[in-house]
Length: 299
Ligand SMILES: Nc1nc2c(ncn2[C@@H]2O[C@H](COP(=O)(O)OP(=O)(O)OP(=O)(O)O)[C@@H](O)[C@H]2O)c(=O)[nH]1
Ligand SMILES: [Mg+2]
Image 1 (cartoon, rainbow, N blue to C red):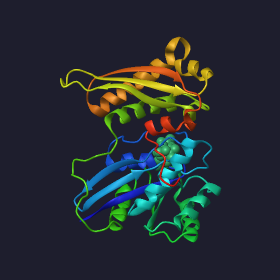
Image 2 (cartoon, helix red, strand yellow):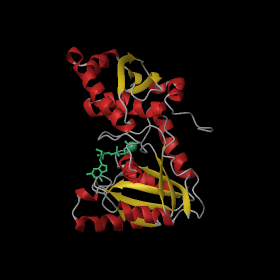
Image 3 (tube, protein in one colour):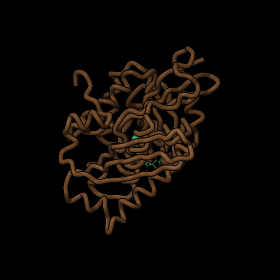
Image 4 (cartoon, helix red, strand yellow):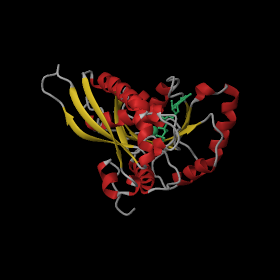
C-alpha cells in the first residue's frame, strides 16, 4: 500500500479546487471563475484499494498586496514543502507568463517529486498540447506530466495512478471514512462565499469574507441546521451591492447557498445572512486568524 500527502500547487484559477473535488468526489473546496478563490489549505482524502491519497488544495500563488494574501501564499508554499508529492496544476489552455515562471522557480526548493498537471485540456485541440508539454519539460525535471480535464474528469484516473506511484509505501494515515479537515461550519460559510463570488462582480469577491455567528445542529435529524452568517465587506458603498435592490441580491445568495448546503449535508437548513462593514479586514491579524488564515512561524 502507498499513502501520503499530495499538494495541489498552482496559479490562481488553474483548477486546483475543481481537481480536488473531482479526486475526492465531494464539493469540499469552493470554485469560481475569479482568481484567489481558495484562501486556506483544504485537506481531502481519497481511499483506493492500493492506498490513500491525502490531497492538500492550496490558495493560488500570486503577488500578495494585503496581509491576507501574504498568508495565503505562505499556506500554499508550506503545504508544498510538507507534501510527499507536489502536483503543479497549470491551465494548459492559457499562455504562460511571469507568474508561471515564478512558480517553476519555487520548485527547486522542494524535496518532493513534482508531477505537472496540464489542466483544462477540454478547451484545447490535441495538436496544441504537444508544444506546451515540450515547453514545460525544458523548465524543470518533472517526475511525470499528465494532461487532464478536472471539469470533465478526462484522464484523472491516470493522474491518480501516477500520484499514487510517487507516494511512500505504508498503511493509510487516516481511517477510511475520513473525508476532510474542514469543519461543517466552515464548509457552510464557504458555500455562502461561493455564491457571493458567483453572483457579484468587480472588487467585491476579493474584499468579502463570510463568518459564522451561530451554528446549531439539532439532535433531531428532521429539524433543520440553523446557520447565521455575516458577509463582511470593506466599504460602506459595498453593502448595498450585496443587499441588492429591495434585498434581492442577498436573497438570491441565501437561496442558492442554502440549496447547496442542504444537498451537501443531506439535511434541511435555516440560513440567515447579514452584511457587515469591516474596513481593512484583510489587514487585521485577529480577523485573519478567525478566518483560518493563521500567521506562520517565521513569516
Ligand atoms: N474548461 C475547464 N474549466 C475548468 C477546468 N478546471 C477548472 N475549470 C474552471 O476554472 C475556474 C477556476 O477553477 P478553480 O478550481 O476555482 O481554480 P483554482 O486553481 O482552485 O483557483 P484559486 O482557488 O483561485 O487558486 C472555474 O471557473 C472552473 O470551473 C477544466 O478542466 N476545464
Ligand atoms: Mg481554489
